[in-house]
Image 1 (cartoon, one colour):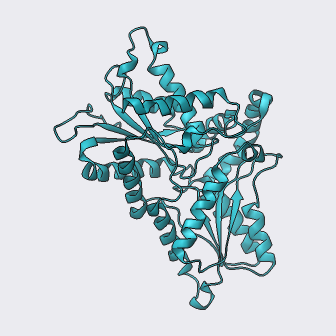
Image 2 (image 1 turned 90 degrees about the vertical axis):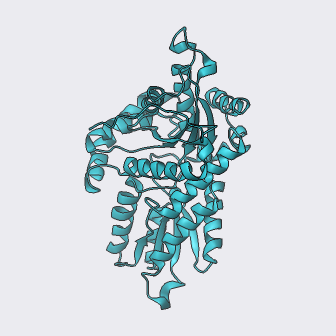
Image 3 (image 1 turned 135 degrees about the vertical axis):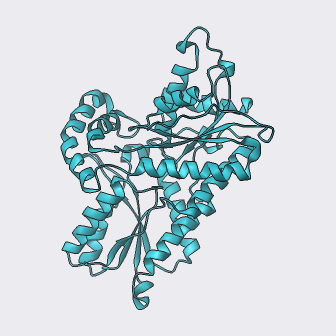
Length: 390
């Protein structure tokens, strides 16, 4: 049953409210029937998977060929991705906290905008309009990336999509009577790789997993921080993602007291081109073959469970390690999911952003040295320019 959302209203406690809090992420198919459409959108996105001039031909071809295999993977983890469930839960719980700690920007309305799966960015934007934001009514919205570490392939792609739909829905392109002064006023939380609350949430989950090993072996367990890889063409363009992931790892290791050896590894490579390594699966295999069986895998760039954790790590990497003799000794730290520590961190990040008056970070305005995308340039100018309206 659909929930009827009451109109957005402002009361005397919310001098700067209401505020739409929009969680942005890649998303995932909630059912196996959605896999084909999800892959079609994913492989059509040159920001994430750059295929050059052949994107329009190779993208659909690759997605069609991969759909049956990926459908089986989603079936194996319960029939779909839990990322929507967790994203909606995290956003809703964060907004409850924000209503208490930031009453002047209340009520905070939770929204989720996915890049490749429902709820898609355009549908979420339209829902915001239906709820009373924009279209001549103004209102404030925060685009809150759920990628803690910025990449042009992830956060950048989501912001490009958001900017595109803002242009289509809230400019003269949407109708002759549209008053752009009454459009949604946007700001962006574009990265938060070393926020203390994020670091603490990761550290707590790692410590809980380490506690499952016998005390005499615990200090020798190798921590493998695993993040989604990037094509080297993107890395060499100057994308900040590898450095920001490394910054998160360093912060977590510092919080843990550097008690365990560690490595940063990369997963989910697609296609024959060069990607950032070492690969997670190869690293685990190599360590196990060398006799290092006590390993904890930590999904350091993900804020909830999805196919890369539940299938790729749990059912492929760990299963293969068991086949090599590491039975029960290669484990995965829990994802952040419903962590109260993590959700409080989200609220703290949002509160600081709302208080700052900033439209986005200073770092976001700086393009990659090798960037030639006019779309990226226009998007950055738009969001940076929103500061004058906040």
